[in-house]
Length: 234
Picture: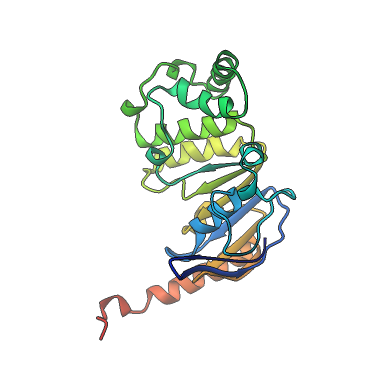
């Protein structure tokens, strides 16, 4: 990612972001509105930058959607924005069909993925009847089935209770590819290799996870001690 800026209707969401990172576990931390989700969509190739270039493994995914299917998978905050089929098997098999598999082959591969996650009994389950955490897991299985080299997590634990959060963390810990995990909560990124701190659309700091997360926590504590939430605009 080199000199990347992104604007919508004249509003600058990201400005001059340059990153060159090659690690297995990369975290992105920042407050709401800092540009984290936009960064995720740029890396996934779902949107193109207004300025600059974004490459993943040497490929510009916004210009090559077929390559994007095998290079990057993404889990959004809300699984209902991602799920489009009524049954679990159909949902997990869909991406494989997009990659060129025939229906029978895709469904057979989807069954193998369900079995690998210990969820073979979910095959005919109606997605609408699943809990939020279960829907997140369906999305994860659908992405893992496609075997992307990079999995992007955009606030995957938002709205989950503690047991469901821990269970999803355990499943994600088994993922063998690279992870790009975006969160406002530094606890989600503990133990990661490298962390990028976004602030107001730019990189405030990046480096080893422990140091960056400590600095982020300190700043959030400082901001939290202020009382500007009570101020009204003049």
